[in-house]
Image (cartoon, rainbow, N blue to C red):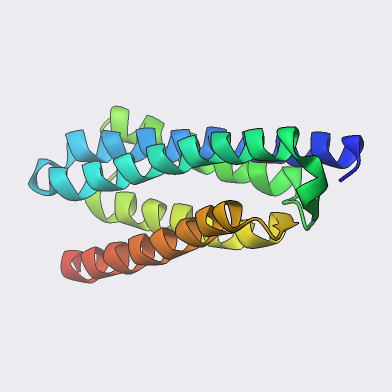
Length: 157
């Protein structure tokens, strides 16, 4: 990757890392608000924290060994901004006690769908097995989260 490509990829990954942290905070707030499901929401929060930490490791890999990577499809900044806004808005509503249980689940499904839309495996290409394993881990956990949330959504009907 050229230095310019590395810079753009790192900036994008840092934005996604911030979103992962915001998602973790949202899920932690849900854990505190919906006490009957504390363990479920707390588990999601912990997973997002791990994702943010993995992104930091991935950023370090890209910056220290840029020759192992090639450019991919970076998410549009407008998408990232909208994604972050939705999480912050949901978090604010939880704190203000104006978000209903069903709506918190709908927001969480939106968060997981948006992570899938980001297309982590498409952001940067590499033959590095460790990096690719982290990308697959993101997708696998996100799909699992989405299914768990959908099940919770059905129960809430």
